[in-house]
Length: 448
Image (cartoon, rainbow, N blue to C red; front, side, top):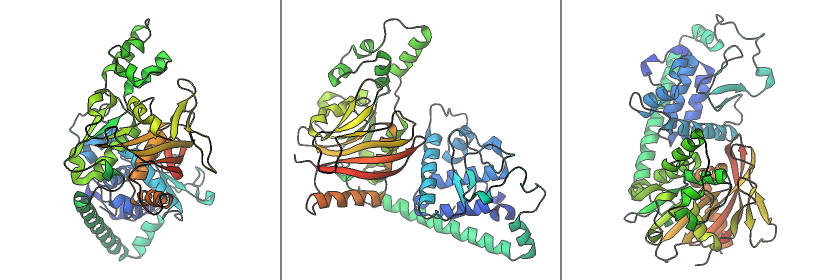
């Protein structure tokens, strides 16, 4: 499926193969991130085919879920966010392509939020994959747009050179075969490869690991305008203490829904899915659960991965005193930052994150590997000030080169020996709620 094989392979015709947008996406699909992905190539192919052909009725979340992800007919996208999750991953992969090997492409492909359709020009406004010429001289305005009946340059060239179509079709088949082989080899490697560091410290065959994601009930702190401790969170009267005594019917229904539902963030979901992918055979040992489903007595019994800061996952407060970088919130819903308890030369005392989730700018997150309180298990903690920071950690850990860079930085700091336990502060630059780059800001070696 390398050269944009579609959901209807027999429907690929010469006109589609010669379309410059199709050829651009073909080049993107041949890059490593897409060859290693199981879902993103199929998703990109489906969106591209129906967008270019103008079959906009097929570009709904439900139809994408059925055609690309094999969801049953009539499934509810409101209860299954897999399409939205993968579209967001697709957006990030496209950004990475144009920041790296595709930086010299004359045309950009983007995935704007809120739509799954392709914009061709000013007369057709709707897209998930928006084609944007980089140079203003290439921008097609309403006045200079090519008439619909005018033949495309590539199509005209094909009529002058009849040998061109067999060559293009052969290239498409070869690219598809190359991608198929790459995907098979990648899948086989993942099944047999060992769990990569640092996940290998908490994901081990024969030993269960719980991935504890944030609890949506923590949102009630905004309603009550009050903080809560882990003890309060675990107490039977927690929900009553966090809800106003007088609420109208609509607000009461909302509170009841939040209280009863297993709600977590996109970032937490991305972390869990990334770890499942990297765990390979050991993925059977992973159990994803909400913070509300953890029992205090089991914390010292097995390996744990805690996702989220203390405001959304209260369990991380158990380890706060052992970390150098502490999450601080000036007031409920207010400014959030990491307090650097013991700044080293060149470091700041505070690292302030985004004003709110979904905004653009600089955000921060920490990744910490610690021994459990009993000394018989290990704990990995991922804390983002906002969702974007946590999402950046998932992307960082999901990439082999990023893991190697982190490992090298810790080796240098620890005298060319990878420490058993560490803490790392990561900075990420975000645009419209999505992390687009990150950097290692500071590290600490943790001595048990």
